[in-house]
Amino acid sequence: MTDFAATRAFFHLPEGITYLDGNSLGPLPKSVPARLEEMLRAEWGEMLITGWNAAGWMAAPARIGDRIAHLIGAAPGTVVLGDTLSIKVYQALAAAVKMQPGRRVILSDSGNFPSDLYMAEGLIGALGAGHELRIVAPQEVSAAITDEIAVLMLTEVDYRTGRRHDMAALSAKARAAGVLTIWDLAHSAGALPVDVAGVGADFAVGCTYKYLNSGPGGPAFIYVAPEHAERVRPALSGWLGHAAPFAFEERYRPGTGIERMRVGTPPVMQIAALDAALEVWGIADIHDVRARSVALSERFIAGVEARCPDLTLGSPRDAAHRGSQVAFRHPEGYAIMQALIARGVIGDFRAPDTLRFGITPLYIGEAEIDRAVEALDEVLATRAWDMAEYKIRARVT
Image (cartoon, rainbow, N blue to C red; front, side, top):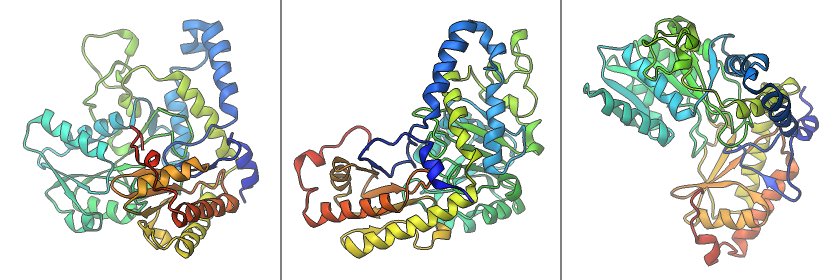
């Protein structure tokens, strides 16, 4: 069984703060500053450019990709790190579309993260071949999977509401219809058990700065199923995806397997931070984390609904259909969240009216849940949110 006191001790948590926003940015693992100091002084400082070989910088995207593979149910050698999540979405989508020359429809849903949809729009415009991005309601996805669909591109857990797709059922239906699947695991990896190989996913992508705690701007990852790895040809054919980058050939030759999904120079410092952050999974089991997340989420929902009747639950009632976050809705959601943050309870807001609370048991427990409920009750009961300073929209909400 996971010792959650030990996992909590792994993180730096500011005094007096109840942090319920790990679904957007994880807190600082205590091991990260020392690891970065080592990288800066002992590696970059002393090794200089020889660090690419001597310190393993060039191999790190694949090595740490294997650590993430373990968390998402992928085989070693099928996940690689680098670039941002939007770039990885574009890579996966471009590769999948090219593998389906007779089909022209990319299917997604209105709960997908907007950047994923924007990437699809951009790719369609660049291809100029008559492709269509078809967006349906989340509950209509299954019925929309037909033999005219080229690619099904979904985020498993809705970034706004926490609604969770049935990855296994949708992947099976897509496969039966000859549809390739791309799963965005940004709100899944490190939050709940994932089995990309078991469900037969064709591609998966995800970021690492949420539940994997790599820090702001941490690198993204991409998974390619082994049966596709040697035949996908990346649209972003960067030099580190070349079969022999340091041969400096004039023409692109794709690298072996997942290596071809690399693009440019890896962000070595952020990969070092992620490497240190992933150490927590040596003492935590993802199944224990999920069970604890469900229990804490149920406690939070019950407390809020008992004391804050003006809020409406925006997440699925059934925990099996919910990720590791809880959403409540209110017309003044933004101002309410700012009043909460001013009281040391940090969640976040998503337009038009959603307050989001990340339930991350690696570092929060019953005390934090109860404090958040009390603070929310106080903000609503006193109308503390109804102050001009709480209604000024910041650039990041």
